[in-house]
Image (cartoon, rainbow, N blue to C red; front, side, top):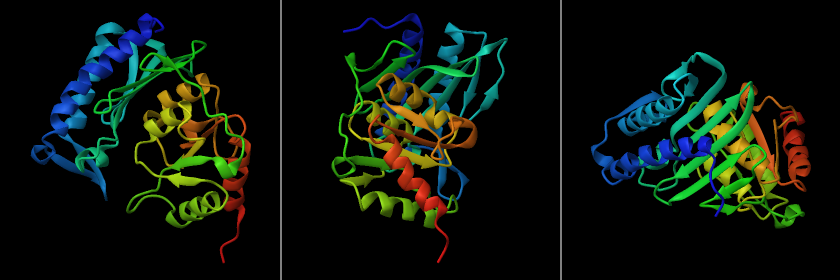
Amino acid sequence: MAQESALLNVMTGAARKAARGLVRDFGEVENLQVSRKGPADFVSAADHKAERIVCAELRKARPRYGILSEESGLTEGADTSNRWIVDPLDGTTNFLHGLAHFAISIGLERDAELIAGVIYAPVLDQLFVAEKGQGARLNGNRLRVSARKQMGDALFATGIPFMGVGDHERVLQEVGAVMAVSAGVRRFGTASLDLAYVAAGRFEGFWETGLYPWDMAAGIVLVREAGGYVSEIGGGTEMMKNRNILAANDSLHQPLGRILRSVATQKPQ
């Protein structure tokens, strides 16, 4: 088993500490205080508690770093080169419905470059870690993206927007176009884990629009360090700024991108 760096030890320690509370709360979901951020967009007491724990642990270890977190927004740090990017509970809707497919996601951005990522699925006890130049691992075992080269053999993942958010018709067209030439499309509802699964070779690719930096920061590092390619759907490199992502293995990144871009250029009937 590879030895984790001091940096990854900080990140995994924060994720594991917050995870203990999430696992307890997951067993008593019916007792959680839940509020709405928007139509079909929920936040729970568990989100806030996990965020407090993660951020406190990161600040204790690196007090000068800034933090961008889903629930609290941006907290500037004295060290303007380094910024944590945190989603304390990615997959809140799954969590609140008793589905164990949720995760804590922590990325580190240094001088505007993503250099490390940790994604931890507490109930599954799956810890995905990656650091620039050091590869990606799952529970200590090295990860590599899938070697499948044909669309017909490939399994893809995406996110489908919920009520009141996004262009539902376009997304359904994208899903239909990819379904027609692949082994299938999955929608699991936790973008960070979708990216981790691309890194692990479980999916050949993943795409989604309307994401935020905390949804994808850690996953971008994982996919890259596992040998995959990450871009905007249109081919650009400002995924977090433009809030869309296409991640896939080296053989299928371009074919998947071409299909998705062809949908975008189709004229309405």
